[in-house]
Image 1: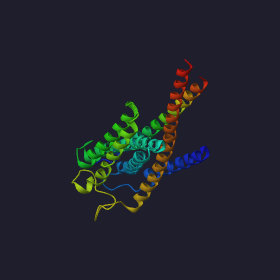
Image 2: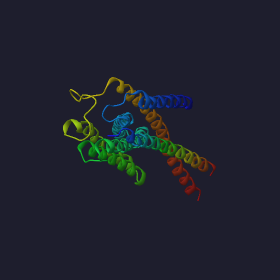
Image 3: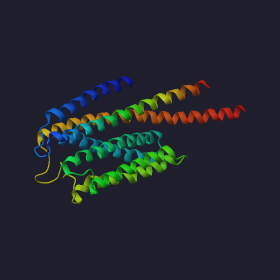
Image 4: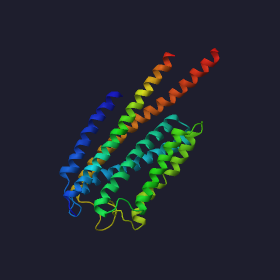
Length: 45
Length: 230
């Protein structure tokens, strides 16, 4: 096995992990903002 | 509350950075597999954190069925959602490691298959909560959460009960198995870092689930008042 060639798998795995965590954090933040907006609209009405 | 969250977020960021340094630069290179083995320092802690979150879901679901507490329901939803995200990481990093080491991305052995089934159970839990309508949804979801958790010990024990392609356990695997002490340091730092990250995600999602609940009540109240006004 050529170890140097396998580094692409290592980097890919780390990118996948951080992509998923960042995506989830972004989803949480945008959901929070949407809910705040909805609540404000409801109270204005 | 916000201040505590921010302090924990800073600590978590520092732990994640240190865990990364441990995994990539400090942990010794494995003799046979080389650097690709370092995927393990994210794969194993993610799996343990996912198991822990599904256990929290199990406890919260049971509590919800006993007491019908909206807080227990919110915790069950939050832990399942974050657990699925960690379980997704396990299912993706595993094949990325397997390709150079085994020569294949996937095999239908007991550990891999039971993990996929676990992921499917909790994805169906989230789909049930998201798409179904009606007052009984939390009860159905709690029941699914309790029975779905049965798969967690099966996943954990699969490599002990069956002959699998998946590597042997790092804890209690018998003579000749296990990790070098220097590798344990990287595993434990990353476990702590990912557990903290999961705690923050669950905390945020829990608060959102409670807010969603009260928003639904406010919506219902507003429509009632509008109906009465007419």
